[in-house]
Length: 83
Image (cartoon, rainbow, N blue to C red):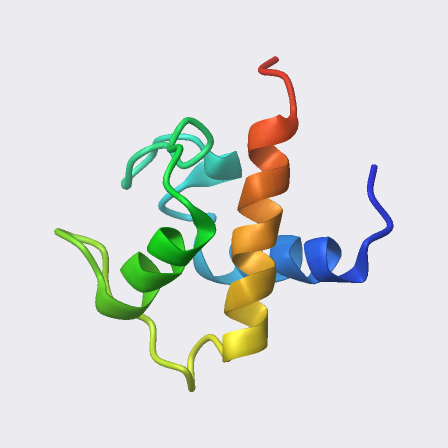
């Protein structure tokens, strides 16, 4: 368990904005993110522009710093071994 405030905020923001389509970073309505090796800046770009069925999220919906924290959280999820 991490104590990094950015990762913890990223988890909170992910749960508020992304969890319903990517539960726990796995596939749901959207594709799995845990197995996606794309760099953090690509994932941030996808959040801002949308992709396929994924809606875009504006800076008003997910502020820049929160988006950075979400991508950091996703990076940390990839480090965890699969259950």
